[in-house]
Length: 300
Image 1 (cartoon, one colour):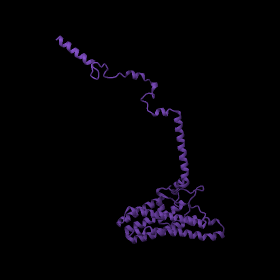
Image 2 (cartoon, one colour):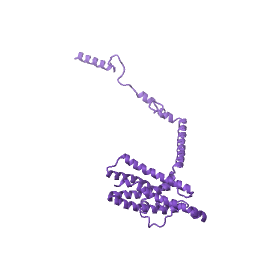
Image 3 (cartoon, one colour):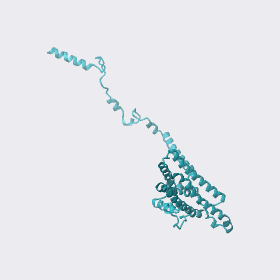
Image 4 (tube, one colour):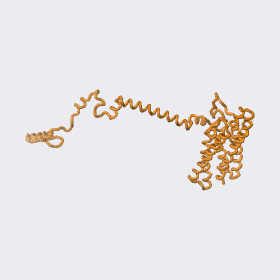
C-alpha cells in the first residue's frame, strides 16, 4: 500500500509540472497573469492606450476644431447664397401667399367659380398696401385650387379613358403634358399682349397662372357629368361652367387691367381703354375654348 501511494503521488506531481503544450519540461502556466497590466494603467492614461478610439486624438486637436468651425460657417454661407439665388428665379416667399388658404376659402371659391352671378364686390382687400391672404379674402387669387384642379383633371381624364378601354400610361402622360403646355402658352400669350398694349398693372405671372388654372374646375364638372349622364350632361354642364368662368374672368381682370385707365386723362384713357377692354374679353373668351378643347375627346 505504501508503494501504491508513493507511485500515485509521483504521477500527480508529473501532471502538475506539465505545461499547456503537454511537455513536462514546459513551465509556462495555463493562464497569463494580467493583474499587473491592469494596475499599471491609471486614470491619467485614458485615451492614450490601445483601447482609445482613433478619432479621439483628432477631435482633441485645436486645428481640427478650427477646421470644423470653418466648415460649418462655409456651409451656412453657401446655404444662404443658394436661398438668395433660388428666390431670384422662384419667389418662394411669394408662393407662400398663394397657398395661404383654408377649407372655408376653398369652399367659397369653388362656389364663386361655378356661380359668379350673385357676387357683387370683386375688389381685393389690402392691408397697409399689401393684399391680404386668400383665406381672408375670397377675391384674392390662389394657387391651391388651380394645382389641385390640374391633378384632379388628370385623374378624371384617366378614369374617363379607362371606362372606354382607351387607358394607358402613355396617353395619360400625353394628356397631362398637353394641358400643361397649353397653360404655359396661354400665360405667355397674355404677358406678351399686356406688353404690346403697354398696360401697367399689378398683375404678376403667378396671378395669370392662378386665373388660367381656375378653368380646371369647370372641366372636371363637365367630364364627371359626361361620365354620369352621357354627352348631353357633358354639354349642358360644360356650357354652364364656360359661361361662369367667362363672367368670373371678366369681372376679375377688368379691375386689374383697367385700373390704370382710371388714373389717366380723358384722351389717353379713351385711346387705350378700348384695347384693354378687348384684351380682357379675349382672355376671358379663351377660357371656354381651352375647356372644350381639353375635354371633348374624353366623353363619348
